[in-house]
Length: 72
Ligand SMILES: [Zn+2]
Image 1 (tube, rainbow, N blue to C red):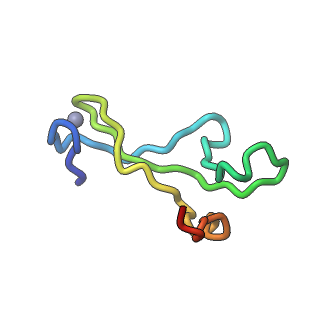
Image 2 (spheres, rainbow, N blue to C red; image 1 turned 135 degrees about the horizontal axis):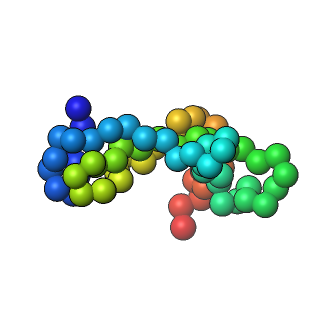
Image 3 (cartoon, helix red, strand yellow; image 1 turned 90 degrees about the vertical axis):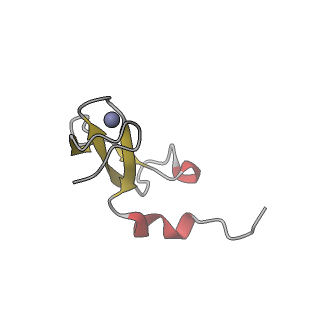
């Protein structure tokens, strides 16, 4: 059980972002490329207030090469 970050309700459920094959996240630096790295997203939704939280990449390791370690 995951408590809603917004209203504290326990009436939450795990969700995925689905548009056909599923909504995916793409590193901004790769956006527009034909074969870009991507990861599906998962999250939790509160069935009381509608809040969506704990949005996560299902494959965060895929994005490691795009981390900018230069430290702006
Ligand atoms: Zn809520």
